[in-house]
Image: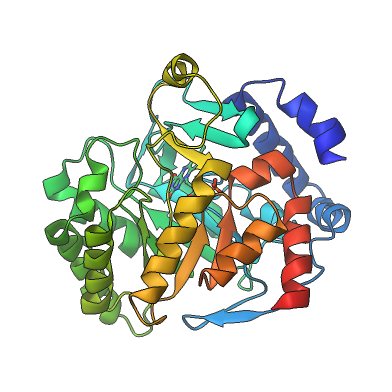
Length: 344
Ligand SMILES: Cc1cc2nc3c(=O)[nH]c(=O)nc-3n(C[C@H](O)[C@H](O)[C@H](O)COP(=O)(O)O)c2cc1C
């Protein structure tokens, strides 16, 4: 039904317009009696759950919603009722910011892909916290945190720390996002010194709490092997809890568009099917070079249940989807859960 009827209507409009419309619909459903239950029933969201414990958290199933869709934590409960085991909200920055000029999100339908250069558009920490105050305790939320565009890299650690401290009581785990290609020089924060600075400060703060929270690092698929080895070293030396692999890529491989068409989309991160091969490679590399010890959330190009199995076979402990959800709709969550339920 989604692909035959709903998607053609949604895809008739530009991605951001339809995103805003869908969120309005989700917020309306959240506010009416039985709205959430209705969504759960229509999508069979509570079926095929098989709990999985990772970094001390009990996930109802292995499939989560990747960061970037629910940037302000405004509809996480409806999304959770569609069957996700966890929802990653954000990227949240200390202050709200508009992001890059529009248009900034594009569908590449021939390749089941998206290109976006949103640029951390979000309403900031205070609004996100207001929305998270209503969170039911059994719902696992990851807080994906970033720096404001106007904060220079030398002061980035302060932004990350502020997000960490303020969100601490409202989320279940954190993801430090230094891999978005749409903020100038953000990916430079993946170098040794910057990461030690940011993760070190967060970890010191975390370890001083009565109960610490899991911290993960979200990395770019465009890192080379030397850089990936350095990341593994940093994860081990700072004692953070895991890696989210991967964010979107600035490469334009695996596309069946002409160079002129690709250029017309402009800058931005590519996600969806063309990203799958690289995401699997990165997950496999991390697992192989850490004796399987670093927990990994695998994300990038999971468009069907077979892709999900490939990601788990590559070593991912949990998986996330974004572009697949846009192209396939909520049935993708159920179909992946059904296959994982049988095989794992
Ligand atoms: C429109 C859009 C916005 C995104 N925004 C964020 C973000 O704010 N923070 C983040 O960590 N990742 C963001 N991502 C990246 C996704 O979380 C995910 O890592 C990436 O899209 C690869 O997964 P996919 O192929 O399933 O989409 C965004 C992706 C898209 C398509």
